[in-house]
Image (cartoon, rainbow, N blue to C red; front, top):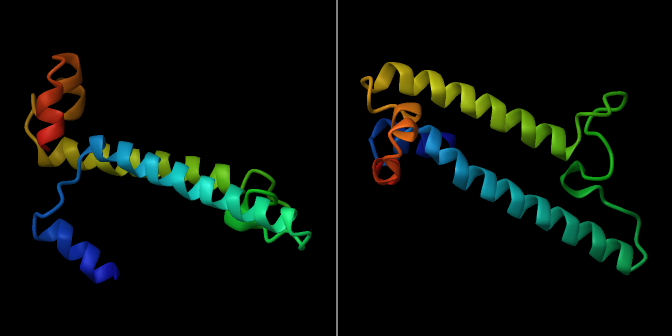
Length: 112
């Protein structure tokens, strides 16, 4: 699966852009909603809580901020830094995400 995803980027099917963080964040929210539904369903049925998506407890004992919310925030920051650096070297000045936002040229952001 990782090789297939890598091929999508190398083959040019998916462009690495900062703007792609928006669908990623939407996916994180959907996964979080899924975790809430699973935890709620277990609580409704009187079962032991499964800690789905690490929403109830940390993934690593003794590290309280390393729960589902902390992991999601950390990944958004890491992906932002990666795509920011990628765009700095892969795109010319004027085509980078912050240049497009400054010019309010949102149509170019949507094209990729």
